[in-house]
Amino acid sequence: MRKIVALEHISLDGVIQAPGGPEEDTSGGFTQGGWVSPYSDAVLGTHLRQQMNRPFDLLLGRKTFEIWEPYWPNHGNIWPGANTATKYVASNTRIASDWRPSVFISGDVAGQVAQLKQQPGPDLHVWGSGDLLQTLMQHDLVDVFWLMLYPTTLGSGKRLFAKGTIPAAFTVTESEVTPSGVFVVSYERNGRNG
Image (tube, rainbow, N blue to C red; front, side, top):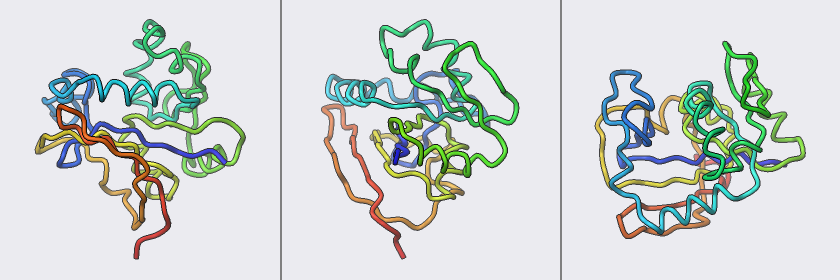
């Protein structure tokens, strides 16, 4: 069975919105995009490269897909796997893309993702995709949270654990604090809590 792995840059107050750049996601009036850049260091880079070089397919929300779609095809030297992975995209408005291989899913997204988990193939990595993650968590489909917890608070923005959170227990399977203070931690699902 394939696992769903949520990989997120997250602030101390739980914000995952627009970590990469000021224009990445300004929805809701968010103006603090690019908040991870002051914390980049070699240790964090090593952890990211390890994740990026594992076998995976991508499971993305439409907004994240549309941010990545014009970028990664032109930067395959940085992350070749983003181009070769099958990209499963939750969208009610898109049905095709030139960035292939891409498969668009709509309607009962949770049901379709549950079926994807049962199929042979690599784990499904979810980056960003805050709305999709709420749906996945609400339906108990996330197996691993691989988080980069940054020593900063943002006060506003889309949060990882919001309306989709259900009671769950986790086991830490990996952890390290980088020189810049980022806590890299992997939490694997370990039953229900409560």
